[in-house]
Length: 569
Image (cartoon, rainbow, N blue to C red; front, side, top):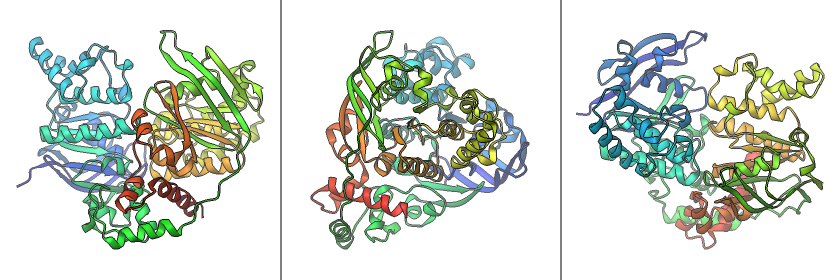
């Protein structure tokens, strides 16, 4: 008989500051050793569930509980935060917010030190856990010296060191490049199988999580559970589309070809899906009968970066002889592994860093002659971490800040700020303090603050990180509408779906060098580029091979063009 690890019994939670409950009458049991994915649109209550499981509710967030939440039969509201931490270990979306040690070893050892574990046992346990997550060669490093994937491994080791029976992952893929995200899912799966821990994953990126099997998917909407199904059952229903969650691309490709998705096809992975010969023939027929999109004429250059070389004061060369041309009215993605030089390139373009060699021209003008402020009049920049951009207490004031410093009239400020907030889905919160927002909502605040300035070109570093599919689509469709009006959009992204759906062209960075500059379909069907840049092959390529299509690259491009046309109607 299965042992319940987590049981919500008619559980509701209402924050003191809110009029309505965030969680409503939840009934859910997660059994010992299960791996469960919780997904749903932003604001559906996923993060609140995480706070309930790790004890932040009710110990840090104040409000009213109705019903019961037990962990291994113990009522959480009757336990201390310390008691809960001995049963549930949490790996946060923002790994930097979880570090407490000056070195990796110190950070992993933190829980053991608090338990007064003898030094000999402490050192042994730290080495054991570091080996389990493959971070043993970085024990003397400072956490801020690590890549995003390495930081996540340290965070995981920090909770595993205490032998907790439940591991909770809050959007573990949000800040990772595609290959590292794939490795993270493999690591979580391997640890779960090796230790028998109960694993709860909260994540938007359904297809990426399903790279390894999960037992169940819990779909939430407005604080309630709307589905508790196996992945195969969920993917064969229309629940994902109805509740604003992105389905895997290969599923969309099959639907475009008229193939009906059923649970007995094992559709949870492109590796397991069982297609009949009729299904494969339908995909081939769709490919041959769907005409390719006409090619657009090449636009004149807007930004010309020639032979850029940049090294930080410590001598580390972040960019080496990089030449990139961004054309007027283009929607371009810049992709590559964490630390490849993508963000550094954008900082050089905006003037935050100054290259040692190379030239920069914008619309024919030498950018080196312009100050950071003067460049900002033409080029807007949205940083990856919203906390590094926000300086005001209130949301409205933050979005208005750039207009205020430019001396724009008050009535125009009101109009432009409200328009930007509406576009980014934040208008109902315009009088809220920024501190009340989630990471994803803060991201939208920073995008709104730049959109309000009406720049000629906008550079966005991970614009959709932490966004559910609905808000992702709203932001990207707005950026596409801006692009249609002549605004040039450059996106630094780890999201291969975004790259395929919205950007015809992609520039690929690896180790500070530009290694590819081609169509998105070309990039994600080139094994050498994928491996060098830590990208992730698109499942559309695998679908083409599975169906016997001789030119899978053309199939991927055909899908992109067709899907873009369908979604624009």
